[in-house]
Image (tube, rainbow, N blue to C red; front, side, top):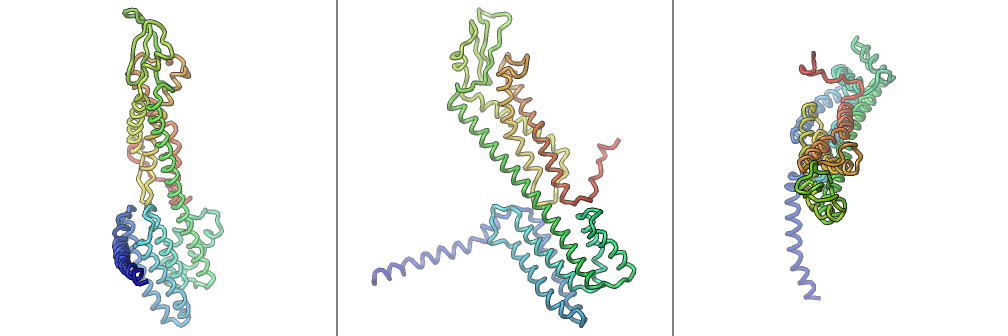
Length: 385
């Protein structure tokens, strides 16, 4: 028993030191995992500081007013609690580091909750000062025929003429603004979901492209990317040739399957896929002229650009396979390796025919964050006649 106790005593300081080291390193590791937009995080911190000062002033005025003293005690504490939760979310010591900007959305949710609670306890004059901002948010995210938007517009018009703010009107404004903020948050989450879908598809296509290249290197004779054109006129008794992406050879007669497989090289598919990736990268760079950028923490344009790379690798290989199978009349027998490479460039760039629909959907998802009633972006000077 004495030996066992002594052994445990010897191990305990080591475990304590390891745990202390891990706890000490966690903030550093969490900060390294912070890959979201640092500017937006600091902007939220500044907004929280501003709201704390405003909330102190609103609470002080509410405590002086006997009619709103109970409201101050009920809502003020909860509002400050929400702001503290927002600051904790931005610190994100326990935040999953693989979720790049999720803590920004969580912090914004707590800030929105504090703002809604402040509406419940603010005075009528404070509500009138905040009314244009609240009305703009409601009009942006609720359709023109929505009865809540219609009532909010009528209420704003009435309050502008020195109308009194009834308790039911205060409750309606608080709930309607809260709904508009939830709609904005849902649209932002839709952008994040879209980005993850595009990233997942990109990773899947990349694995497929790598698998095709590896399998073609292992089984180089399985599906050769070679063509058998005739030599016209014949040269030195050679009437046919076998042309592959990385090698070609001449034959005196029509080449057999064995001769085609002997001419094929393990790196044929790899060469074609690399050409397809390079061509697709040029197409991705060309699409940058239409990108307006986004203030959201989810980088949709980058995800869409990366999707083009594995797609270009696969379309280059598949396009040449279709030509080899005679799918394109008159182009079933390419004459040289240079022609194969040239067609690989064309097929790699042609991925734009498929990914442009995804590009359009990505832009539509980004535009939806501004609400269904936001105005479209003004045309640039280049687009104007």
